Amino acid sequence: MGEFVKVAKTSDIPAGTVKSFVVENEVIAIFNLNNNYYALKDQCSHMELPLSDGILEDDIIVCAYHGAEFDIKTGDVLCMPAVEPVESFEVKVEDEQIYVSID
Image (tube, rainbow, N blue to C red; front, side, top):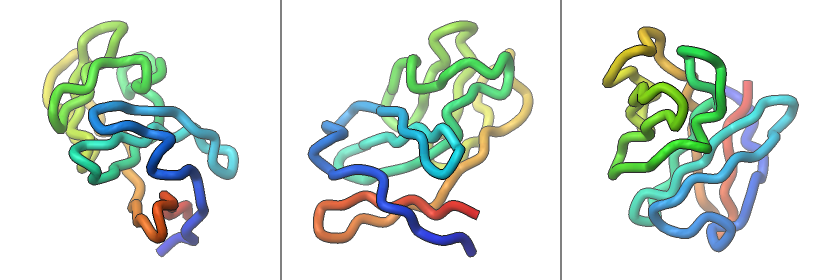
């Protein structure tokens, strides 16, 4: 299990949005789905472009560049052209601070 690193305040990521953060040399997209937070590597597995530029539709992020879809809770691919999942990270919230587990 990795070390939890403080990334942002909950107020930094309004409900229904995604924001990108650099966390210990990783670029991570953090999603706020109904005040539940999820984190994925901010890189589409298809062409390595930022997922945080995409459109959040419930628990799915749609890549803005080629339309690949990923489950924000798991990183699993839901729609091509991507065929590989995106790395997901464990998230916890304490005292309105968002922490992400980094290996």
